[in-house]
Length: 212
Image 1 (spheres, rainbow, N blue to C red):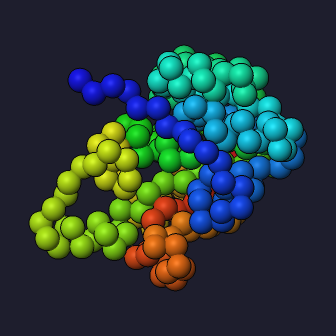
Image 2: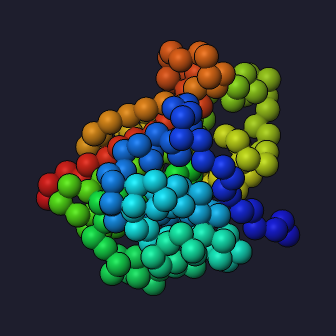
Image 3: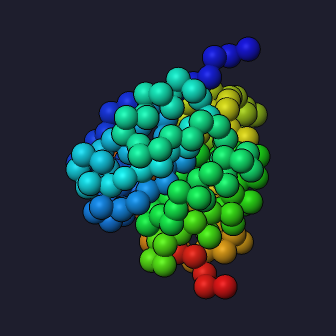
């Protein structure tokens, strides 16, 4: 059985073709943040140091959670799909920002999670998410060649349980009770900054809950 993967690395504050940078730019200064899938804490760390934010982290991989713990007000070890962990996260709210940076594609039922965390948001709170675009030209070319090869990382990461296009990512958000406040796209190659449905490598969304 493969070892659990620790996601993280460096934060690139000047790279606007990076999903972490785009998401962090939407987080208000001094925000209360729920960082779901903290990895080694790369996003929470930058937000704490540079924007004075306080984060509650949720991380499934115990070793990653320990690395991220110093940068979080509280760390919850487990899956956000676990009802106990979900309830614990909600009890720490409300939040100004709930972050899912390349996380939802790893979940069994991301629709359920998005619906559940709506009630965790402060009145002006937002859900901020990024996810790979399975309609990217690289994947399309591989499919034309009869290939659906799983990889370590990237769009076809072997740990992904769900795949979304830009359109279906937006549909999921709307079906889960949100309106689209803002969108952004990470392009690959980065100079090809056009046609998000084909050249877009990752879809980045800023979601506002629809009033009940």
